[in-house]
Length: 476
Image 1: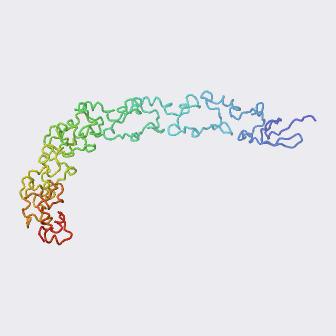
Image 2: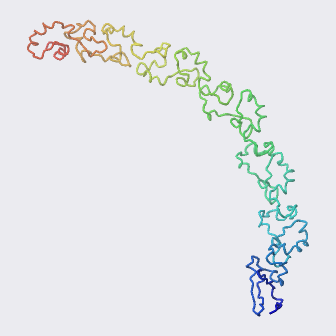
């Protein structure tokens, strides 16, 4: 049966129907048998809205095959783009829907907020070509692209001289260039005092603000060099250690903030006396300043007896080094009683030699020991350990009472019988608890025949047996 032509009413949109092709319109299309076929164009990814719904012939858009037809606006509207004012000369984007709607070409508008650069402030009223001078695609969004001349000509402060960043938004907003604002506190260097009246950034920022150092000397080298003694005495270059941000005058330095607070005569000593090699890394050890005093001291001779070079062990920071103290003397010899009264007269005991000074009583008191006659210590061979009988408070009263504590030798039968010779009874000078009765009672047969001795079966001729039966030296 021969093919028959299609008759389509004008109120319907025609769709080309080709085997293996897509249908264009979403309208009823008559079949050969008189029935109708419907095609939903929305299924192609390109919904027909607005003026597109009034297209009659598919071929109005589909030039050739529907398969090769492109959805881009310019594919159909190149003529309109080419004929529109300034579109080609200004290189407008070819995506028509960025400004036009599908209803008509007129009343075109563009919402810049949909881009990465929303228009605010003065930007909202600026002509497009003022920014899009090379076209509407690929336009840079950095401030300097449009405002390079303003950056270069700015003088308060001089942007170029100060090396300010070209990111205008760091200080300016889009409303106007002035007033501009920059919070210097965010840099870590607060502008206070004399710094707060600086007008030109370049007064401090020589070159780039990014490379400027916060150290005082980076700006104030001239003042440092011109100040009295700063260079010759090698003062620290950290100006704020002595100066304030208000002015250079009335400089002061609080030494208490260092590891070496000044007390005593140190507080009135000239700085250069201690800081002879500069004000940095000055040693705090006493001997670093007082080696000469240490070496010249003879009472006692510090060098010969090896006294510590840490002056603070004995001295304070008072003038004249006196009075000297030795707080750790108790580690060697406790100064108590009468000894404490002579604590400041070191030479009395040490005789100029602080290393070999004896720590026994005899070492200092042998003369008194030899001169004592009641009893005569040397003749009686008393121990030289004075503390056995004496205290450190005074020689008298002594605590030695042989009659009451041990055995009567100053009364009774033994009174003066020992001739003031302790060794007669105490044969071991190193141990006075050892005694000997038999050196005097040296007739064993006579003693054995003594009636009372004969009557005792347990009689023994020993010193301990004598003392056991005669603890007070009497016969009974």
